[in-house]
Amino acid sequence: MTENDSKSCGAEKPWGGRFEQPTDRFVEEFTASVDFDKRLAPYDIQGSIAHARMLQKIGVLTQAERDAIVSGLEQILAEIQREEFSWSVTLEDVHMNIEARLTRLVGEAGKKLHTGRSRNDQVATDIRLWLRDEIGRLLGELGRLQNALLDLAEREADTIMPGFTHLQVAQPITFGHHLMAWFEMLQRDRERLLDCRRRVNVMPLGAAAMAGTSFPIDRAYTAELLGFERPASNSLDAVSDRDFAIEFCACAALIMTHLSRFSEELVLWTSAQFDFLELPDAFCTGSSIMPQKKNPDVPELVRGKTGRVNGHLMGLLTLMKAQPLAYNKDNQEDKEPLFDTVDTLLNSLRAFADMVPHIQAKPDRMRQAASQGFATATDLADYLVRRGVPFRDAHEIVGQAVRLALQQGCDLADLPLDRLQTLSDKIEADVYRILTLEGSVASRAHHGGTAPGQVKKAIEEGRALLRPSKTHGAETK
Ligand code: ARG
View 1: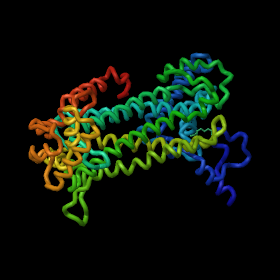
View 2: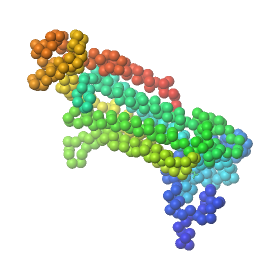
View 3: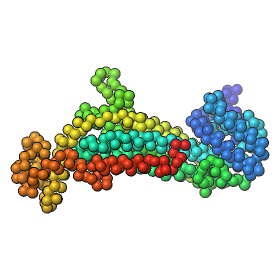
View 4: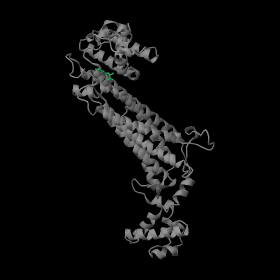
């Protein structure tokens, strides 16, 4: 009996027929995926219902058998949703758990459901159905965040702040313009997700184990029932392809990378040293020892979670790199990274979409910082160029002006006209107009520039991009 104690009964397995020994109990747990793939249950059931309808259409199932299968599967879905379904590790994965329960519920008809299919095409179909839905939810959260950025950019279209290169003050910009840069990154992410969804939306079902099936299946019909764009074209590729998962993780890694850059700026800008922004209390936490602290936890955590998502992309690429065609058990390892990628990304987008509308700018602090780093030096050079000075000479003259201002401990706009004129006789009293921060941003009035008028135009264009007609409908499904 000691022997039997450490083994489970092979006869319980749908594939038990060929085996003389029961599966080792540890191996059973080691190879099982039900603990995590049960998350796919609603999609497994959706796929099975479509498969049963197709089998009836081609005459493999009677109408009565199809109806028994469909109502049995619906009952199972209800049991799972009520958390009354008892999952068994012995039955390995979500697919065999549901099939075994179906047969217990409806008898013989349940045993016929697996005709003309395999778990290999079944699982690939389930993940694609699941991911298609999740991409829809992600696009919804992404849209909420983009809209929040547009609203904030509108409020801050005229707010002056320093723009940076090398994290040194470079030129004055408007905060609205900076916010619209974040919007642009997310718009590319939106396009990438929509494009990725096209390749997710292809149906593996019908590939069966890998070579197809000897039954006269109607794959176009199943694809139509499941809302797939088309059936996959090659059965070997259909069961083994996980490009769509890798591609999705690449999109996710890039979105997280964008959120992480965004986070980095929020962390810097809420520090006492910058003090450009105030984050809502509801999105920050305090310190258990330092009573004065208000920490930007949400951005910090999102920046940290980026590492996880980037890691999952590497994990999936490595998972696939040495796999011969067609299906291999390795592929079972695709689910946990994929699930975690979706969860992490969805939560991060949600946190940002909820937080961004409550970001408070501190225009006085931003303005002060913009007026400190000689941010209008380029404007002075451009002024000289407009008066016929070659740009390189103008650059040198303005460099001297900056040195002068540094010596005097003042800004360029504070240098008296006669001092400026010692550097170039092309400088006249009207120079002070272009040395102001407002004059500087207003002068960058071309497409893509920081002038408030252009920022408002960019916001309008952004709103048009998010209108439902441009988002191919199904986003919120
Ligand atoms: N749990 C498996 C997976 O996630 C389902 C497919 C199993 N197929 C097989 N031939 N063992 O990939």
